[in-house]
Length: 176
Image 1 (cartoon, rainbow, N blue to C red):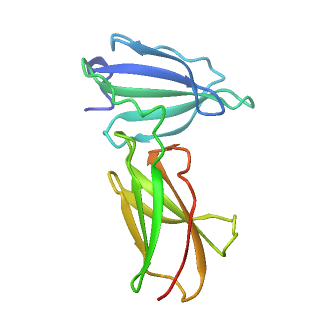
Image 2: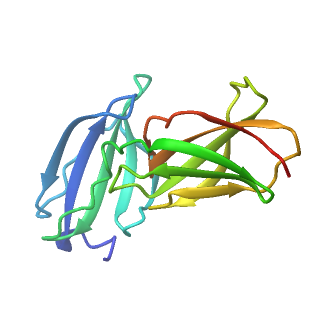
């Protein structure tokens, strides 16, 4: 795709609310690029993971509402980001000499990965991101554990900036 050639591209404009939800969207057929009010200003641009050119335009300064414009090859549908991703379930933990093994059920078909979060202590609540795994992952082994120390874990699916709810929380005490 040639980003400078507006005659061979279609344009999709999506208005996002401050919470990331889509307020409205519109696709233009590439015959002319819609004009934007002079108060609008581009705040970011780049290529997404599908090599689609995008720009984020601050349309209503101070309100948190932005317009993202995606440009893609004419007559091709844009790759829309997922609106939601299903949470993993049935998280379980088992202890071995090698560490703490986690296993869960992958309930989504559109995730790009999984995020494992961990906290230290029997009743801890201060979970922190601990590991990032690829799509379709259903296991993880934590080998960086201390003997006789309790750990708690939770997992969630990710799809770019979209994240699922968390799985159930599991606890295990390392024997390593």
